[in-house]
Amino acid sequence: MTVLEFELHRSLLPAAASSAQRAARSAAAETRMTCRGVDVHYGAKQAVDGVNLDIRSHEVLAFIGPSGCGKSTLLRCLNRMNDNIEGCRVSGDIRLDGQDIHDAAMDVVPLRSRVGMVFQKPNPFPKSIYDNVALGPRLHGMVKTKAETDAVVEDALIKAGLWEEVKDRLLQPGTGLSGGQQQRLCIARTLAVQPEIILMDEPCSALDPIATAWIEQLIEQLSAEVSIVIVTHSMQQAARVSHRTAFFHLGRLVELGSTSQVFTKPQEALTERYITGLFG
Amino acid sequence: MSSQPKHIVHSYDEELAEVRRQVGTMGELVATQLEKLMDAVVREDSAVAFGITKREAWVNQLEVEADTQIFVLLAKRCPVAGDLRLVMAASKIVTHLERAGDEVAKAANVLLEQFQCESGSIPADSRDAILETGRRAYGVLREAIGAFTATDFALARRLIGSRGSSHSELEGSMRRIMESVAVGPKPLNDAVNLILILKVLDRLNDLAVEIAKDVLFLAEEPAAAPG
Image (cartoon, rainbow over all chains, first blue to last red):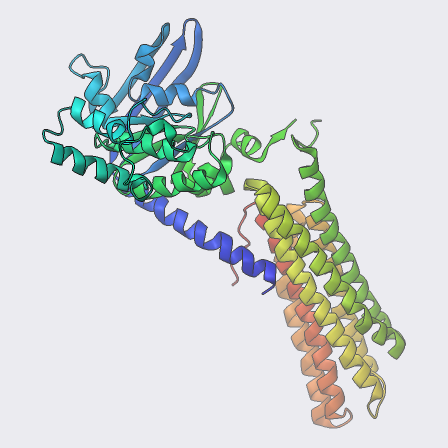
């Protein structure tokens, strides 16, 4: 075996096997969220066109595609963030554990605690690190005492991989943290309300490689407890962190498959051209 | 007729083309080495055989250069899908060609030993068998390299499918050599050398077929299971 073959075996094959195992686990998992015939219009312009897909428990599902393909728009449909956008019209059927999220009986506030969101740019509240995490559980009535709140804050910060770095300065402003720490604080804030699904819209696009690695490690750990849907422009990030990958183009879902399949042998020529950077 | 799609980043196309070119160059050198081996057999020329053993270092050098190019490309470009299959196929083919180069040099060394032994030559019947096996291996090797550089899947499939018949012909040639030892006229040492050369040439044929299988890997198409 040549040095190159050894390196390839060492670097690629274990990762491929691990990815295949994760994909198999994902396939066996139950469906948490379903989208059927989802269309989104901004005024007269259609941004999402008849999308059907399922989100499974404990999976990381990556949305990839060129800018304007509708991936972030679809992501925001999943916890009705688009409700706040003027002129945005969502149709089709989106269900969380079988319940229509647009049903009159569905309160959007608990929906957004069950389906949390982490944005492209870290957006901590102008409050202390502690309060950033404690605010959600307090608003949702999940904690009653100081001791309960302390426990929730500590647990969320531990899960977000931030506890050791901030445990001695919990009362300092969250905005004083580095970009990567702020993003993990936002993840801790999301985790504090015990979500079942976390939506991440390019969560690492403003971060350096080390901070990105921390977030990716976190995504891997969190998938044991929650489902994660991540929008990313980084093909390598999608390949590294996700179990399944969905490729969107011009508002349509072109291909959805296991990440190892999409990145080694995509079924659609359009997917291949996009992920390999081909044109013509 | 539409042209082949190009990468948005032009230098990526150039690097992939360079990998193809390096594999082609290495294949050309190994095929030339094999051609020289046949030349040495026909002319019973020690100098030609010795030249093959010296040029083996060139094959190894090309392997190092191709490996380096592939390694850097993997690190820089993180290829996926068809690009990844191309790079992986190139890596496997480079390994097969390096082994093929080793095999040709091994045969040249055996040939040199044969020229130095008591008979100092190759019996006519054995020479014919060696030339036939060698030319077949040379043809398959050239075609396999051509299948890679031209991405010719039909040719690769044909090469893989044609492998079975040459095995039985080789067995026949080896049996005849052993029989000639048994009835007396051929020294045992000669027979061993001739069989070693035949085995090397057959191994070259096998390696060429492995290269053809690597070409099919480009299409993610499994080669037919043996048997």
